[in-house]
Figure 1 (cartoon, rainbow, N blue to C red):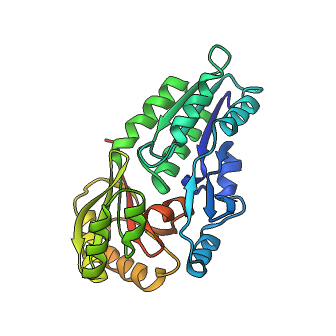
Figure 2: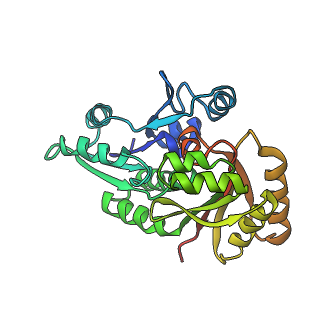
Length: 283
């Protein structure tokens, strides 16, 4: 086992087999539907989340792991390691990073804990965490792993479009008047994660036009290592297949895969979004 322990949170949506193989510790966020509370990735999968969204009149909400939960994780890992790298969802989306840092302060002088704000979520966070865990297993120093991880962050990009504006309004990414007007006009906002924050970039009137913008977005890159379609199972299928066909036709030099986005991201962009996460290789 590496003497450097890697910690992340459930928004990374890491495959359990990979988590075990690389020795990553995943701290779950909490997803609530009213008074019902679930741990993301533990007792609430993406498909179960979207099933509940479709059947419930209550909008879901997410909550970060508490300071105490992080303290318990760090204390356990500190029994076998004196260095921990904790990489988490963008601090501009919730308080996960802030809580991790508060917990880390408790171990000053006993265990070196570095908390990194990924400025991203979902596959973007997964890419960073996997790279850090592989470097740890190759016995790289903590400083080198931190430098590697931070160097990768500016090369991660995420864009989406969404059907449901009320999620953005609730999370203060749109004003209430913008959300009402957008819904009345059938506008589908084109969103990007920029410097860790979800921001509306452009607007599209139809899903086809929104998909056109996703294809145009890929055209901006010349040195791509990974591109994934991020989809909802509620509308997955035809839109995702159409986007995949367009991408394969226009950009045959790249490989594409598709993932269902997780519950926490779903509480931000709603249940019927489609997007892309791109990792542009470091030269």
